Image (tube, helix red, strand yellow):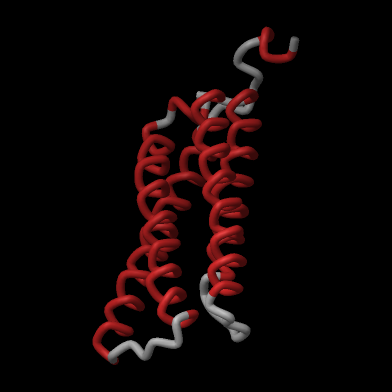
Length: 146
C-alpha cells in the first residue's frame, strides 16, 4: 500500500507542477493580469493531492489502514472527486483568462459540478477518517523500521 500511495502522491505532484506552469504561461501569453480560478489548480493538486497522499503513505507504514474497506472506498471516490473539482477550476478559469463571458446556465452548471465534486470529497474524507479510526496503529512489520 505504501508504494501505491507514494505513486499517487507523485502523480498529483506532477499534475500540480504542470498546472502551475500552465497557469503562469497561459495567463502571460494571453496578457491576462486579473484574477482567475486557474491560480487555485496548482494549490488544490499540491495540498489535497500530493501532500495528503504523502502523509497517508507515512501512516500506512505504521498502521493497517490500507486494509480497511473504507480506505479503499476513500481512494476510489477521492481520486475521482479531486480531479473533477480541478477540471471545473479549469473550465471556469480558462474562459476568465480569455475574457469570455459565460452564460448564466453554463456558469450554474460549472458551479453544480464543482459542488458535487466537493460533496464527493467530503464523503471520501469521512471514509478516510472511518478507516483511520478502525485501523490498528501498532507497527505491523518490524522490517518497515529498518
